Image (cartoon, rainbow, N blue to C red; front, side):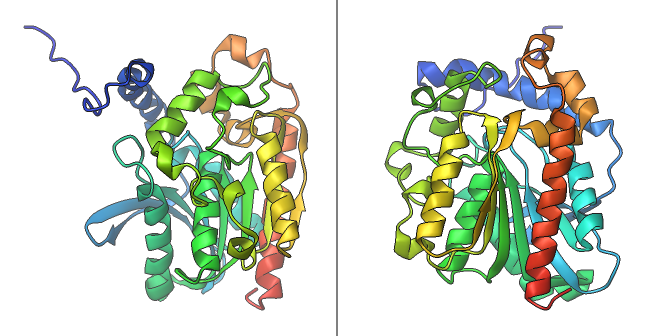
Length: 325
């Protein structure tokens, strides 16, 4: 019997520069999912109804009742990734800050381009602001932490919060954030350990339309001083050997100019994605090519541990300043 051909992802996308990558995405997702499916998770898996759709989350509960909540957004260029990969990171932050942490399985592009993933996060925030007591959560004392493309979603939600469109965010943490979609990745400084600029460009083109890329929610570095003035206090941790480092630094400068409290520290020697790699070494060792591993700083796990602790302390301090811990 002939093998059934895998259904083509988004066949309406015919751009030859994207088509080759898109045709590989289902296999990449399937392989990554098979690795993660074998791993036990500590987070409680819950499916949350959000109007016309459902979003799966992984809830790591605080030790106490009615504690603040932190939403964690994984990386993957908006195209790849699952919340369960970051399960250990979420659990550690929950333990260190004694808060609830929710890993979010937001919808992925190209099936669900901008603004769908931002809407998933913001609608979850609204859901738990209204229904947090059902889960023993203080759903109105909110922090956000994101990695790479997940940090883009965090910044977008923080901009909506600053505009009064969703409940107030008390603090945000952006790790190696992707904040400038106007400049294509090939125009940015690259390092040996960086992802291929062509793949990074594919992520950009699949997530947003060309006319959307200067929108502050897509490229937060394009936000005006007025749009940033009510942005929540932020911690921004770029990676030194990362093509996205300079836009993280630029965004920190823009926040400071708008009067927003911001702490910015470049983690030395480390590569883009180092925290998530260190947080799930089994996944990293399985999916990362040996030639790629040779380009990475051998001490990145130690830097990742320090970055997670910095994140937890920052969020805990923000909640204490709000009188919620």
